[in-house]
Image (cartoon, rainbow, N blue to C red; front, side):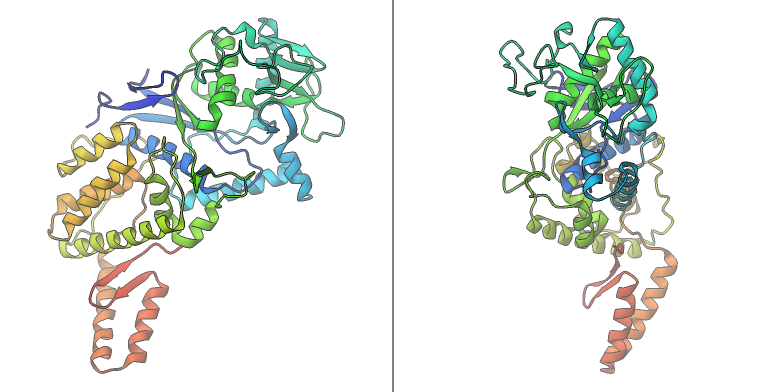
Length: 476
């Protein structure tokens, strides 16, 4: 199983699926993280979940992965193309907070929600403000090599010096008119040029002094190039982000990075598609977003994860509460089937897998259905197919007592990051004993006492369905 021979990912750079083989023993993976000025919505969460699955699956396949995902805490303007206010400074002003006070609050909230989704922490989570000196050096090097120019105190990348500019996005620079994509800016030589360093006006709070540059702050695109190369090297195996990053952010990263090193910046580019609501892109500017915290409060982490991962990452899945309730029902049926099979098989000595590192599962024997599961995920992380195999395996548990299949289902859930509560032998004995007492109360028509036991169990996360048995759910 521990082979990359069949791993295929859709590479946005070539617009085709390609076999993925890492350059070295360690897979170097950078994913664009959150600009920490506001709470994340379910569209953001879908993107972070698929990169979490990617890390899990690569480690499951036996490879070491170094995952770096940044926090942007300076330099991301309200217009991605160098116009407007800093998003963090603007929001902090509205809330009467210091910018870093807002940033720290949002990072804490981000991790709170990601932990509930069972998202692995990246190996390194750098903040842009911690890498200002490296960004300054990067800008000065591009100036020295003729790829950048200074104008009115700011520094811009000269896209005419990079012949392949816009290839991944399919941009036609010859036909591009000033203001069509970037907006009019008299300081730029070309409409497609972008800011590396922006001179800050006197009233701007988030600014930095430099001996060779103006008092200012870095451009948003610069940050990811500098942080990714510092921790992962000049050429990455995989760079990932949302599909909205393709025409501006990632296009600019490629230009500045490859001009700086003279090397290919990333071999694979993976992009997650938008979540939509009634066919329209979910977004804060449109006011049609659902906060991740709201979804988590409604149905908990495992169901939220299943809802968002049930959509293939390159598909514009439409979000609806009807879909959420249907998945919640499917999750509860799955819980009942698995925990009932656990009790019948006496399967209590499970060893949870540690996806914080690479795994060696070569000596482990799985049910043959695992081959189908792996094949789906090997084909560009086909999660709808993987869930189909998982549900078929769970349904099979209803009619068989099979330790091998039960362990295989357990591993499938772990690869998908679904933190399903398995039972211990001690709690099984305890709950079974309480339910026997409750049954005696019911026989004697002692309904108050019977209801008391049921409510007591429910408060502890155990749901009792008369005639169908009992199971434990994750408390939200």
